[in-house]
Amino acid sequence: MHIQIQCCGVVLMLVLFYFYMRQKRIALESQKAFLGVFWASLICIVFDIFSIIVIEYRHVLSEPFAKFVAKTYLITLLGVAISALAYVYVDIYPKKKDYWHDFRKYAVLWVIGAIGTYAVPLYYNYSADGTEVLYTYGPSVYVTYGVSLVFFVRIFYLIKKEKAKINPRRREAVCIWLVAWIVASQIQFMYTNLLIVGYAGSIGIMVLYLKLENPETNLDRSTGLFNSGALYQYTQQFFARERDFSILVVIFESNAYQNVHLEKREGIRMEIIEYLLKLPHVLAFKNAEDEYVLLFEAQENAGAAVEEIRSRFRSGWGMNRDSIVRPHWLYLPHANVVDQTENLLYLVRYIRQEEREFFENDFFCIGKDSVDKMRREREVEQLIIDAIENDRVEVFYQPIFSTSEQHITSAEALVRIRDREDKIVPPGVFIDTAEESGMILKLGEIVFEKVCGFIRNHPLEQFGMHYIEVNLSVVQCAYENLAQDYINIMKRYDVDPKYINLEITESASTNAKKTLLGNMEKLMEYGVHFSLDDFGTGQSNLNYIVDMPVDIVKFDRSMTNSYFENGKAKYVMEAAIHMIHGMNLEIVSEGIETKEQYQTMEDLGISHIQGYYFSKPLPEDEFIAFLEKNQTRQGA
Image (cartoon, rainbow, N blue to C red):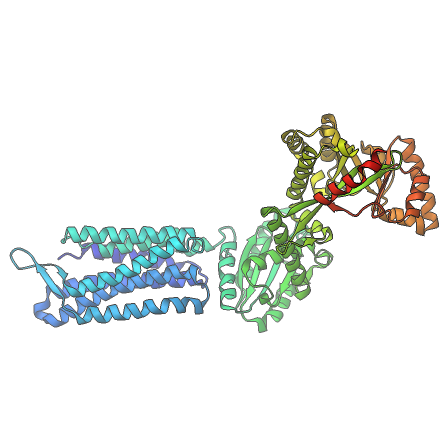
């Protein structure tokens, strides 16, 4: 029997181990499991070689000893099988208690298989002349292969069943490894003089290393720090074990190097990175081009370490310490205020984007209030996503009364969503979040489609109505494809554009004005009309009316209320009405709730009235019923 192939396998694995140990590593559970597979495979090959030698010299060493060694080699095959199962379990059961709860019965099976392998007979198959052992066989071998088959079936079953939980690259690598091992076993079974199972196992280990477990894949090549992938995996382990830790996020925004000459910046940057790499008891990660994360496992020392690091930055960089770098700092003393890595990384992004104190100061300590605020916004985001995916976005209509025609001639379409309990969520809860997240584009498109569907199914003329007003958010106004998307929707529903009036806000007209005007021009050419919404709030002035090609100006409720509560506001509003009428534009006054308010606005020459005096916003069915009830009076 020859051992050259097995020796090649040993050499290959030792070379891999050499390169593995040379790399900077992080204590990931997957790498620990990989080392378990590595050592089980290496021991298996070594015992394969040892058993061949012992069997060949069994007459010198004794027959019982030779069979003991041969059976031990078979047990190492079981060791490889169970280590492969443990390796797959890393992704499926990140929590130790769940891991051991399921793995325990397979550990018991391994013990039973090992005892059975030692307990039952093992035989040799000799060459034709009886001088050479070709292979071993018998009950001991059958027990080993039978138990190994159970492990392999379990592994393939988990790979298929838990596909979503297992790293795709790990899934692929394990499959390649096991298939190579199974194919090698079949070849060796057919050609008994080819002992290649051990070598096939070493090839499988190489596949695992190259595709997944090379420590270099966790390093950022430009800095030598651990990368964002390593940060994700490592912190996820802490959350799975319910262990607390601290992080310090160092953010190098564009003005961080403001007093550092351009030609010196790269050298200063590398000096900073070298400092971070040498920090004791700290793991440094590069999470983004301008963002480094320092992780402290020992929380009791984190606070002092943070102050020491900040002090080092204040002392300057470069040979003369004359280069001052001023990063922003985000400090999270207790990471267990969130429950998983996704929320941790989202929290960092959220603070950078939303917390005013972060912009005003260079140091921000993340407390429970920030986390609660972030969590509420994430819940609202999920609420919006659920509503979009499950068709729980609705359109309510608030009637608009024409003082000249003395009936309802239009309505404003207002977005509403329902939660999972079928309760209406007030727009004040979700609109801001929808705009900040960008989901307002999808919500706006859904609303516009529903409005077009409403107009197609309920011709407005039969109710004495002329058009429906649809709000455009700031984000929508800055969206370059808005005009074409809305034109396509109107064509799809066969809606005449004269029935559509789009409302823009003053703030929208100040942001991305060129894009907004381009969209307005295309839509107006198609036949759509526009209103200027919320006049009287924010940066309100008449220049907006001059600049924007609108047909209608809508007085915000606050402006309407001010007219009745503030003497000075009366003169402002009356002057605005006079000038707007001079431009031949119509006016809608919002927030009218009493007969006296209505009468006053009518006397002022306001052409359209909107408010609870006529109706609150109504769901589609109730709005139709409202129109049908008032249709006779409107037509009179």
